[in-house]
Image 1 (cartoon, helix red, strand yellow):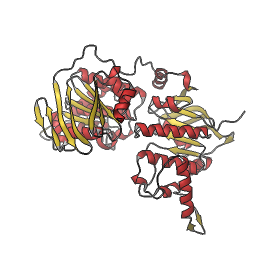
Image 2 (cartoon, helix red, strand yellow):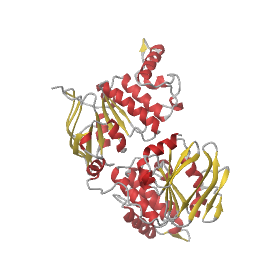
Image 3 (spheres, helix red, strand yellow):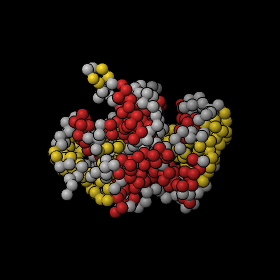
Image 4 (cartoon, one colour):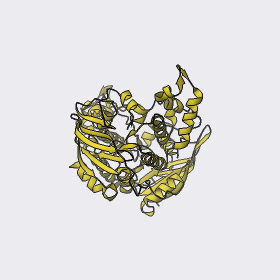
Length: 496
């Protein structure tokens, strides 16, 4: 029998107080894609770091084609033929495509760089993966999808035999995702082994041959793709049965009066003449391709940017916000797509992040009441199930789901009436996704007006009471019954 391309046998890794991996065993064959799944904290990142040579296991064995493998550094992993493409890309924006492809391994002779040879090889590698860009263009001018393809070209240039991709489609459009999956399919047929990490289960069904699920550092299942359906995959990931993926919509809609009306709102070219309304108790979904203007619209509503046209009417009163602080005081808050960069101070504790916009509620005569602050944080922490080692745990160390809950808690302490969720479950595992969805539906049931912006079609179809589709800065379609709408119909509207 032919030995597997890669064998991971009984690999374990511990950190102070945590056993991150517990005798994990996984095989990868030539031309095979293994989907590595699990909730945040399941051990995926630790296993990737071991395969990338960034960490060494405490026990177990690694073999490639039957030969023992010692990955003492990232350089050793690269030399062995293992390339990792992280969610945060590693290209240098100010360098050209060619220079990034040869960074750290320049071609030279007698100390003189062989630029012509590098350019020839760069063109050859880019052509191989179907990327039509000049080797002389700076990587900072490329789209995220193109940068990702450059990373793949770099991996193939060093004759990688194993490609590990971590959340590769998190920032890609639908068309870019399709092109990436097609490229990976071609590379698989050429014998490349692929480890694919993603929370988007619909992609797993398109690219994976086998599913390997980790939970609490242990392998819980390793099976061919066709032997598990979506609900079974989620159940194995979270360790409990989820009777459904999305909360039930109320049988009798409990929507009330119009809370927010937007008329001809615009800031060209990103947002052009958008009009809609949201009622109390309603989840208004919004989707569209990347660049359609969804996030830019959310920033206008939240006072982060100023519109050049149109009006906003909040509870019958015309508003024009000059800052996010004014919108917050009026009762409109934004949970941004980039929660780490815009929604949280990641170097500070969870309780501190919760308190920052609410200091006036916990202080009197300029003196902060730590008791009131702690009590309020504990109340919201219990409601949303925020998992912390301690209240002042640095928020940057929390999982994506717990970070999102901290952002949600701080705004609900202000009793916000309109909540703008921009990609609320991006980078969040299946179990936490269900919890976030449950909380969003609960808030709507309490009478909050919610705008749910997402590129995840299953999410907007499963959560929305009404659904708007944006294209080129405009609302181009409305679906009054998302539960009766197909993904194909939404994609057709988004693409025009």
